[in-house]
Image 1 (tube, rainbow, N blue to C red):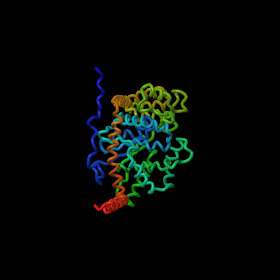
Image 2: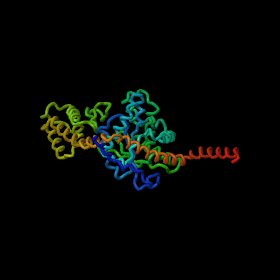
Image 3: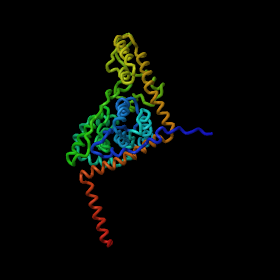
Image 4: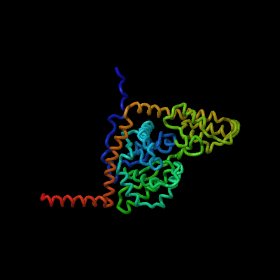
Length: 377
């Protein structure tokens, strides 16, 4: 007798959005939009930067979580990168589920499968200037990180497409890392400009920044990033976590365990603050480290234990969901179909406010009338 297939943990729970949530001027629950570019596995930096807030807020807000594959084209337009997108999208969805995002409460969707975002971004492009976009600091950093010498049009317009992402579900709150705060400010400016020109249509979203901000990488030189090989991934096993932690940058001026060390700016202690639930242990380690009474090895060993304790339930959930064939695809598909319904209604509302809808509708109506007259009907 064959082995029974693993039970789908979300079967029967993927329900349509409630009617009150659709383009009502006053909603019972406000909305959140945030997400990630599917460039690879998600890491601890993603968790402290945004994922933790998403899990916490999904019971209070109506949440839309975008897997922003179109945004990857701004720095990774090559065919080989596009060919990896499907696997990366599934991986991101599994990481979301493993961290505790519930598709019965939240909409997880694929950006490129919602074509309305492109049309809305086109409207928004005319509401902001090139000099204003050029002042967004993270764009130059993104270009440098990708080895791009001259700014592509798509990368310069990254915040405009992001504004369309945020406005399409009419989000009120955007949880982001510190490096994306300037992007949300562009969205706020575009929303205000649109509402001024065409009447109140979009909420002006607020930003929510994680209390930990960007998590420094294990090298201590930059924020955590897959491309810099300084990341600990949410799906890493215990041995990999140990290897990463034991090689972490600490205090470069500390030559032995009996020499007083610096806690401030020390990545190992930043990770303790973010992931070690034993606050008394952290304070004890800090005091002994400053006094030269504890070595880096003990501090790192306790961090390994804390990180694996944090990651164990995430690993367990990810393995369970991954064992259910097609689950990640189902979650993304169903969320995308729900988002497409919202997107059509939002785009129609925007075009109506602008007066764009009447252009084609008028031509269509007169053309149909003319055909009827010529046919004698």
